[in-house]
Image 1 (cartoon, helix red, strand yellow):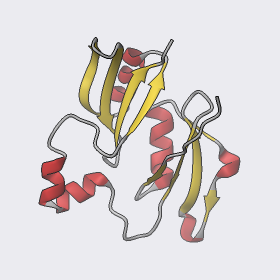
Image 2 (tube, rainbow, N blue to C red):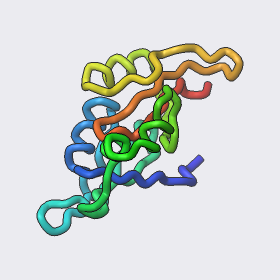
Image 3 (cartoon, helix red, strand yellow):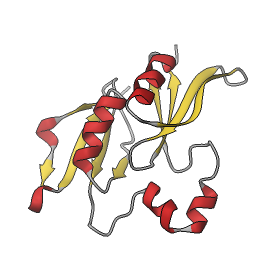
Length: 143
């Protein structure tokens, strides 16, 4: 089935995010889709998450603050993020949750929940944050 929804994610530094996401999470950039504007700022980029599904990302404006910086500057944001859950994040299915977690942790991902089984829904998952504080959950692919 073709992908029917495409997430857009903003990053303060999309170029650094692309490098990090490919190293830590194993995503692949569609380099022909990258659009770079004035001063080398990425206005659009596409990453394949491993099964042909994509996410779009960009650095929207110099005024954008990523979740990590927002939490540092806003007490309310710090409070609503003071938990291990994915809030306003993304869920990605992967082949091997444990191997994916090990790769991401080695690349510096902030681990919110180490790999664990969730028997009542029949999945294994781990969750964490990327370099700018966006939250991600990775679950085993449905069989």
